[in-house]
Each structure stands twice: as structure tokens, then as C-alpha cells.
Image (cartoon, rainbow, N blue to C red; front, top):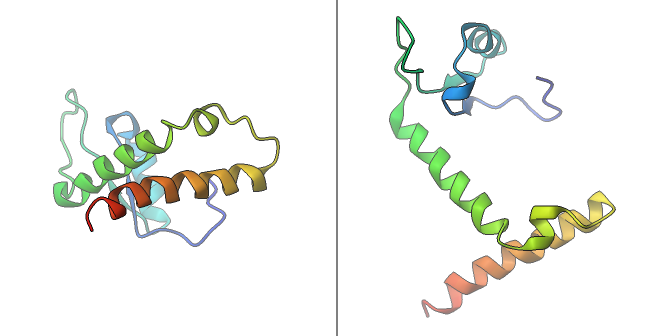
Length: 102
């Protein structure tokens, strides 16, 4: 798992990433794994569930962004145009919540 930017302090993941080798790899790199245990684990590791709640917020944000068909299917040819449209879609979502509250 090569991360091109600075190493994060923690990794939020779902049960699919619950494996001893994966957890060990993260800990060696100094990254705290926040992964709930699978139901068949003999010795379950209990994550910080307060931090794990943030994962739900992130998932909902991606779901709202993917409501724009252009983002979900990635019609854009270049990374710059995709990032630009991603910014426009984010602004559109932000304005919707900001303007109606005034």
C-alpha cells in the first residue's frame, strides 16, 4: 500500500480489511488501524468506535458526490478536468446547504 502523501495517523476501514497481516503492516508504518473485527475472529480487536463513526460521514459525502453522473462514470479524459468538475460538484452541494439556512 504505497501512499504518495504524508503518512496518515489512522486508517478507517470496514470489516473486509480485518486481517492480521494488514493490521501489522499498518502498525509497522505507524498508522493506527481503526477496523471493526469480523464476526468469526477468535480474539476480536476493539477499535475506537467514536473515530469509526467518521467513516460513515465520509461514505455519505462520496455518495452525494456520486449523484452527479459525470463523477460516478468519470467521463472526463484528464485528471485536471475531473478534479475541476469534482470541485464544481462539491461547491454545488455546499451551496445547497448554505443558502437554504440563511
